[in-house]
Amino acid sequence: MTQKPDNPALIAAKDAQAKVEKCLDEGRSFRLEAGAGAGKTYSLVAALKRTIATRGAELMQSGRKIACITYTEVARDEIAREVERHPAILVETIHAFSWAFLRQYQKALRELIAASEKRKDKLEEAGGVGSKLVEYELGFFGVDDKRITLAHDDIPLYMSQLLAKPKFQLLFQQQFPIVFIDEYQDTDRDFMTAITDHYFTPKKGPIIGLFGDHWQTIYNSEYELAAYPVEAIDKGSNFRSVPAIVNVLNRLRPELTQAVAAPAAAGEARFFHTNQFTGARTNTPHSRADLFPEMARTVRESLMQRLQGEGWDLGKTKMLMLTHNVLAAEQGYPSIAKVFSGRNDAFARKEDPSVRFFAETLEPMAEAYQASKYGELFRLYGARPAIDTQADKQSWRNDMDALMTLRNEGTIGGVLEHLQATKRPVLPDRVLRREEELRQLNGQPVPEEATSLQRHQALREIAYPEMAALVRFVEKQTPFATQHSVKGAEFENVLVVLGGGWNHYNWPLLLELIETKALTAANAKGFYRARNLFYVSISRPMKRLAVLATQTLSATALTTAAKLFGEANVEALAVVE
Image (cartoon, rainbow, N blue to C red; front, side):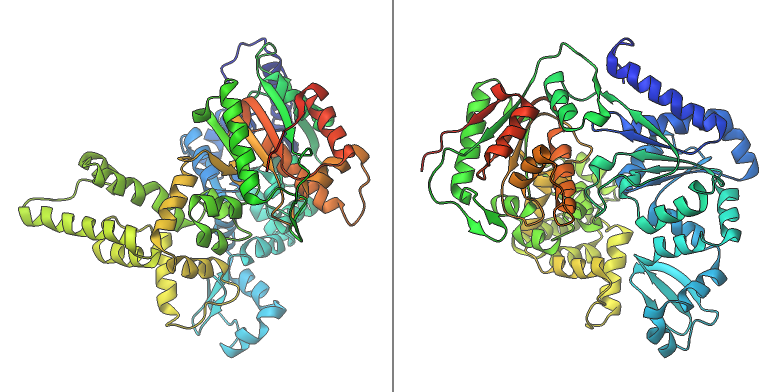
C-alpha cells in the first residue's frame, strides 16, 4: 500500500489494523473481515511482522511458534516469503499443519482410528490397530501388519477430535500461543468448529486471529457468516478498484462499505443484456433461456470489439466465464476439465502437483529449448548439468527431441514415464509419489476414497497437447479465465459473462432475489453460492467492468441491475441471428 496517507482507503485500513493490534496486545481473539480489494494478506502479514517484533525473541527462546494456517500452498509460500521465513513463524496449509501436530501423538491417534466405525472391517482384517505406526503420505487409507496410512480427509477430522480433549488443548496452546488462520471461511469445518467450541466459546487458549471474507466463500458449501464469538473487525478499504466499480460493490454489500484509494479516479461499470433477442433459446436442465453457444460467442466477441473501440486495452482485459466446460471446448482441454469436474480450482490454481510442474517447469523448458535459449532451459532445470563431451550434448538433445515428440503426439502418462527415465527434468516428489502409488497397486483399482490418485490416473490417459493448452490458460496466456480461478487476482479490465451451463448457478434468479429478498429453505443456499461468485467476479477489475448476461432476464432482475450499476449503465444489446 503506497498510496498517499490521506486517502480514504488507507485511513480505513489503518483503523482496522489498529483494532487488530489492540486485540493482540490485550490477548483477545478476533475476526478480520476484509472485502475484495481490501488487502487482507497485507493485514495478515503486518500482524505477523508486528508479532515477530514484539514477541519473536521470546518465542524462539521458549521453542514456541506463531502458527499461520493457510488454505493453499500458493498462499503459504507467499506469506512465508513476506515474513522472510522467520524461525518464530510456522506457515503451513491446514493438512500439513495438522499432521505436524498429530504425528507427535501416535497413541492418541491409534485410539481415534480404533474408534472409527467405517474403518472397523479393514482394521480387523489387518489384525487391529495394535501398536502400528500411523503415517500420512499416500492420501488414502491403508493398513498392513506394520503401519496405518491416513486418508486426506482424516487429517482435519482427527485434529478436531484431538482438540476436544483438554490435554491436547493445553499442548496445542503451549506450542502455539498465537494462531492466525488465513481464508477462515474456506478452512475445514470440523477444524473451525473445534476452535470455536474449545477456545472461542470458553474464552481460553491461544490468541486466534481469523482473516478472510465470508462473501468470498466459493470452495466450501457453507456461505453465511458463522457465529464466531470473537471481536469482529471490518476492513472498509478498497485499494484495487476505481469508484465506479466500488460503488457497485457497496450497493451489493452495504453492510461492508468500502472507501476507495483515489476518489477522483476515472473508470466504468456497465451491464449488458440480450433480452431484445426473440429467437430460439436453450431449454435444458442446466441451461434455460440462454443464447445458443455459437450465438453467445458471437455476441461476446462483438461486445469485446465494441469495448476495444471505446478505449479498452484487450491486452489488459480478462474475460471471466462461468465454468471450465465452456472454456475447455474453446481452449482445447475438454478431457482435463472432465477429470477435474467439481475440483476445477485444483488445476486453475495449480494446486494439482502435475499441473503445477507442467505449467511452471516443463512447458517453459520446452519453450526455451525450441527457441534455443539454453541458459533459460538450464535455469528452469535447476542447474547447469555436466556436459563435457559431444556425447553428453547429443544425449541431452536426444532426450529433449524425444520429449518434444511426446508433447505433440503422446499422452500425459507417456511424458511422465519419459521424464522418470531421463530425469530431464526431474519430477517433483509429489508427482513421483503418485506414480509410485499407482505402481504399488499392481493394476488393482484405485481405492474409492483416493480421489487425488484417481484423478492422476485419469490424467495420464489424456493426450499431452491438452495439457499444453491448459498451461496456456492457467499461465494467463489467453484472455479467458473462470470466476473460480481468479479469487485474489486483479486485472485492469474485466468482462464477466453470466450464462447457463451449470445447475449450481442461476444468474437470473440471483438478480431477482437480490431485489425481492424472497429467500426460502429451498433457494437460500443457491442464492448465497451464486451471490458470492458474482461478488468475486465483479470485484476483480481495477478500472473497467462490464457484465454480459446472455440469458433472458425478468423485469425484476433488470431492476436489480439498474440499482447496482445505475440505470444509465444498463443496456440491451441488439442481437441478430
